Amino acid sequence: MVSQKGIMVPTTKMQPLALKLEELGFKGISSWSDKALLLHNYQYNGPDPVNYYGGIVSEEVAKEYVKLLLKATKDYLERYVLPHIKGKSLEMIREGLKLI
Image 1 (cartoon, rainbow, N blue to C red):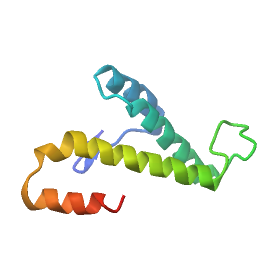
Image 2 (image 1 turned 60 degrees about the horizontal axis):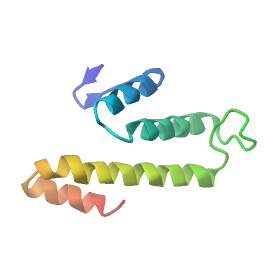
Image 3 (image 1 turned 180 degrees about the vertical axis):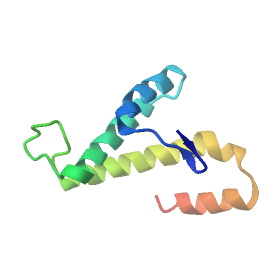
Image 4 (image 1 turned 60 degrees about the vertical axis):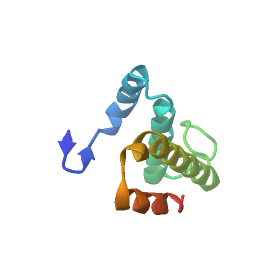
């Protein structure tokens, strides 16, 4: 589904989409989506301390996953997006990325 702000994908379709994107050359996106889905599950169900369902076992692990996703997003933006942006917009984005 396409909206004015981007593409919305149901969580049930994220893994197949990520695999297709990997085939098209977007390396690492499948791992990112897996982490995002684990965080999504953690948000709704909380920790899985005995790892019964293969979820996130603690808040500390969830925080580390968030850090990993933020770093991966920052790296992706710097490599593929920022080279195509110029002027004041680029400056604003770079300032925002310093927060990550």
